[in-house]
Length: 71
Image (cartoon, rainbow, N blue to C red; front, side, top):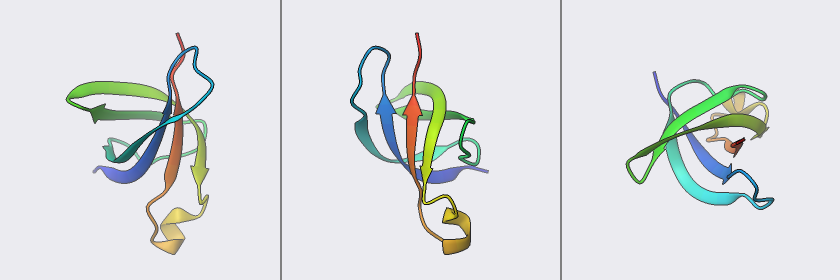
C-alpha cells in the first residue's frame, strides 16, 4: 500500500531542501525511517528526518516529509 506525502528532498552536500510536491511513498512515512519514491521517472531514496504533523494519520492529513540523502 502506498502513502501520499509532500516531499522535501535534501540532496547530498546541499543544506536546502527542494520541494518535490506530492508523491507516493512505498511505505508509511515515519521519523528516522526510509523513504522510497519516484521523481521525474527516477527512483529516489533517503532517510526521513521529519514528518509534519506527527499525528497526520489521526488528522487525516497528507504529511510533509523531509527526506535527506547521504553520499
